[in-house]
Image (cartoon, rainbow, N blue to C red; front, side):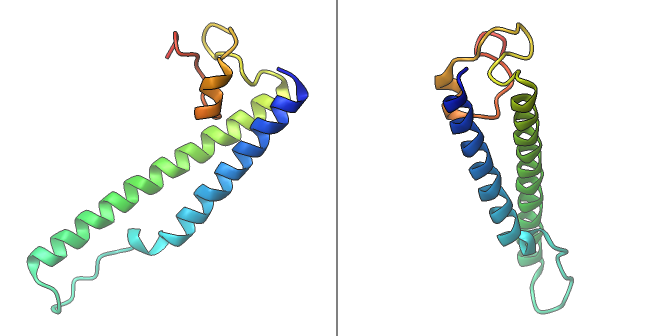
Amino acid sequence: MDTDRLDHFRSRLELLAEEIRSAMESSKEDSGVVELDTSIGRLSRMDAMQNQQMALELRRRQEQQLQRIANALKRMDKGTYGLCGKCKQLIAEVRLEVSPDVVLCVRCA
């Protein structure tokens, strides 16, 4: 992969990481503890607890994606970005455009 394409994917990864961090910061309150006060009923409390669990799962997925992005940036530094982690063949650039943090080619995935 040439330098221009690597720079393109590096900027895409950095932008994606910034968007995820921003989303995580704005949704920090959603995953907080559900207070057990008397002002809400049992169903409202269950709904709040379900929303909390969904927010926690979303945060977990966002953290995993940030880790995949960090790993992709490390692969760029080592010169192995764009190579399948399993068969070591080139990953199609179309696949990298859709998901720049991908590790496996379509065949191995």
